Image (tube, rainbow, N blue to C red):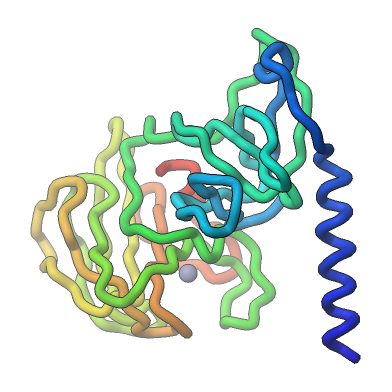
Length: 246
Ligand SMILES: [Zn+2]
């Protein structure tokens, strides 16, 4: 019985998603006058309009993208310069006024950081229920198999490389990007390949994805802090949403 109710509830959600985002073709003239706003955290971005296509990224609530059209239940968007697809049930399409379209606050690649590993974003940045022992997730998680290389998101100097506490095997790197100092954190690693004091270039392998510390499955937990590392499990402290910097 419980299962039936759950299934019905899911169907209702999907149907209302379709209604909210509309259907039908869009002609060339209207393409440039619409954008879409993401309504879910960790929404998967795919190379094509079905679940069988490759996941290339995850996007979060509030991010906006240029709308390029629909294919069935999928919305085509311009994502980091490529035509990509997201499930229409979790986006909202809205009209913008042609040439004066406000630039999305989300910036891609202009901040000098790159993705530290492959795989989709399985948990976004921000408030959480607290069931995992923290009420603010001050980083993002990338789901990737154990052993997947983890790379420095920017050039910098290794300031920590240890096995300790909730982070398990983790590395911290200090950076100077466009004149601003940042600290990045890479946690739950299966192995570490760098030592404290080492200067590393952007993209250097610093370890591999694992599930050490407070982790229930293989993933990379990645944080970006402005300035020095400050821990907080209840608020953002000086952490920033990495998705706004990658
Ligand atoms: Zn995490």
